[in-house]
Amino acid sequence: MSTRVPFALIGAFAALYLIWGSTYLAIRIGVESWPPLLMAGIRFLLAGGLMYGWLRWRGVPNPTAQEWRGAGMIGFLLLACGNGGVTVAEHQGVASGVAALVVASVPLFTLLFGLFWGLRNTKLEWAGIVLGLLGIALLNLGSNLQASPAGAALILFATAAWSFGSVWGKSLTLPQGPMGSAAQMLVGGVVLLGGSLLSGERLEQWPTAAGWGALAYLVLFGSIIAFSSYLYLLKHVRPAAATSYAYVNPVVAVLLGIVFAGEQVGPEEWLAMAVIISAVVLIGLPQWRQGRRASEAKAAEQAASLKAAKA
Image (cartoon, rainbow, N blue to C red; front, side):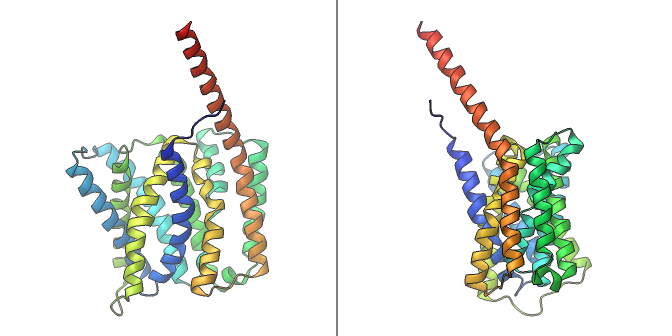
């Protein structure tokens, strides 16, 4: 008996797989006109403010103090440390496609951090972790990360912060629905703008049309649509499944970087991409199997209930 997959889940996964794959190129274009922390701060403060104002106008209640604290912690980890770190790393010269490859290791870190909350990994997931770490090692042999050691370290830190926040968020009290996205983006934006001020960033010249276009794309698609989809998935599937977008994003980002930004990807980095994507697929297999068994069991239970009702 076939089971129907909720349209919301399909849409959320599609948004992550395609939109977030393109945001690395948008960031690359944006940091050519904007200081990195300033751009990231404006991006999330504007996106969060628009969402918050619209939700309040629709009658959604303001988050409680406890919900603001939870949203602040996750916004700091995912947006200020995670996305902010990626933005600064690309500003320091890390290619957008290579940045996406490093971020593809999010499911590996997610499984490792999940151990602190009592989650147990299968043998297949452990195999994926080992294979993924090998892919990261191969990636560091490529010319892109060797040319920017500070950028490489920063993007690894950003990946770890994003993964830790993704797991921790499951046990925190957060605002429900889109208000959770809005609150986290507001906090993350304020922190990033504070970091920009403290680091002495300033505009050397007025941003170009491409710079403004990149910022607008990141606000609407990369933040409001895709980030809300990610938080939706974190609430409805296991963290490792929610982060499965990581095996599609690198391919999208690398191809876009080569075609539109003239980025060069060496043989070590192509091999690393194959290894990391294979690792993420291994990690995702137990999630997909578990989800399929649960769906089949639910369908069988519904069929039995319907049959009993007709009897």
